[in-house]
Length: 145
Image (tube, rainbow, N blue to C red; front, side, top):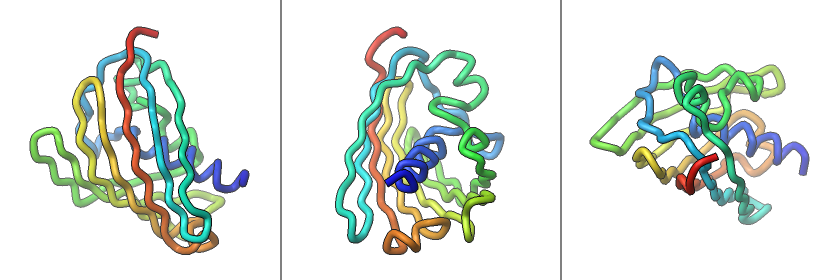
C-alpha cells in the first residue's frame, strides 16, 4: 500500500505542476479542496480527498500542489493542445526508483477557481499494478487560507 500511496502522491504533483513547457494555469490563491478517484486493475477504485492552501508564491513557482522535483521525478511535456480552458497533453517522467519512464496523458479543463482532469498512466511502476492506471481529479477553491 505504501508503494501505491507514493505513486498517487507523485501523480497529484504532476497533475498540477507547471513548467516552462506548459502554459501557466490561471489559479486563484486560497484553500483548495481536491477529490480523486484512481482505478488500478485488480485493485479496484481508490478515492482520496484532501485540502491544500495554495499561495501566490506556489502559483508563481508552478507548485499549485507540488512540483515533480518534490516527488523525485524529472518530467517533460509534449503534444500540448489548448482550446480555451481545455488542455490536453502528455507527460513523460523518469525517476531513480522507476524501472522505465512513466507516461501520462491528460485531458483537463481549468479555470481560476476549479479544474477537472482525467489521466491515464502507463510505464513506471504501473506494470506491477496491472500495466495501466486511470485517475480523475477535481479541485475547487473553497475560500481563503
